Image 1: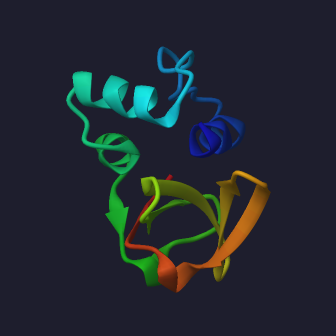
Image 2 (image 1 turned 90 degrees about the vertical axis):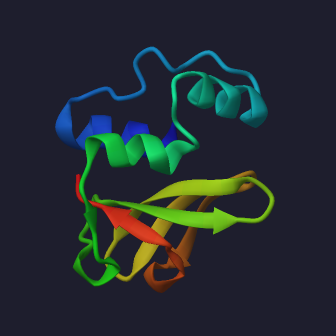
Length: 103
């Protein structure tokens, strides 16, 4: 929902419409899979083109792999990616991303 909120703020398009309401990460993942998406990055790739990490700009989305939750989407801001962590907003280096999506 963090990445979808950023997309909504930047574009006015609410990609999370119809996806809200789940109460756990696993419940959200099952909802994605019921609709044919493996994870959040798979859903992002249905809306946005994949771009090389070096071409990712402010506001683009980036896919990170977190062993605890698998896929995480963050928002690119220069050489860093904003991500939502259990303890709040965090930053990770852009080169830590697996791939990026042009918003």
